[in-house]
Image: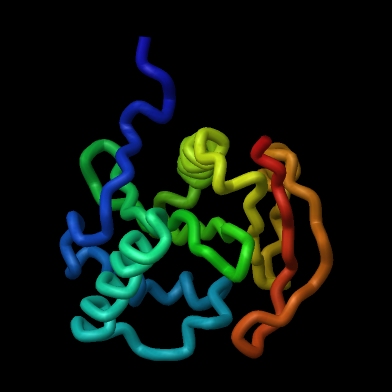
Length: 160
């Protein structure tokens, strides 16, 4: 019997239409919870973004994926090495925000199988008020941190 996550696919960023990513990242609702989103997305920025995300796979053997559900692009996210920690991020199309927990669970199942990842961290802007999903996943808040000149709430989830 199929599980709820069966229709969710993790793809390399290079496997998704740059136009789909551009339309996604230009959506005005994203800026509400992305304090580092301080520039306008253009086709050139998308090309640089995809190349940078792909370079993480080359450098670290892990990185960000593009996500599909039901055969359609729904967002991107994954793991990024930050010093000695693996940070998990998730950026979904606003009309697909409801898939967040399913995608996160599938990604965290992946992390639990990787011996390099004893825990993951999450950085959320202070504007994020609905944190029940992180609580249900078992993440605990560590406090506030500065990242790239902006303040974030930092959470940690043990994977072993």
